[in-house]
Image 1 (cartoon, rainbow, N blue to C red):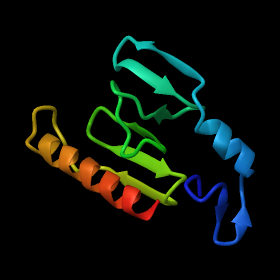
Image 2: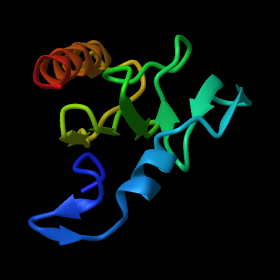
Image 3: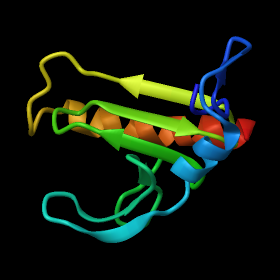
Length: 110
């Protein structure tokens, strides 16, 4: 719904203006755990220190490897939740590859 400008299956849940505001930079500061990150309204925005799948996506993730990304330019949303992910698990390198492929797909559509 967020990637589609607030509408899903013909029903509007949020205004396009609210979605666009959520995707605008609200702060750019150093978080004690994440480090430097650029934030919209409750979501991370693409920055050199905290990459999104695309420059137009807003995203967030969990410590165990889960993530969510939404891209207004392509209309694509993607979420991932690994089963029994552990820090240092080889899945980490697969997540990087998945993030890169997601970015390529979003850029080709948007």
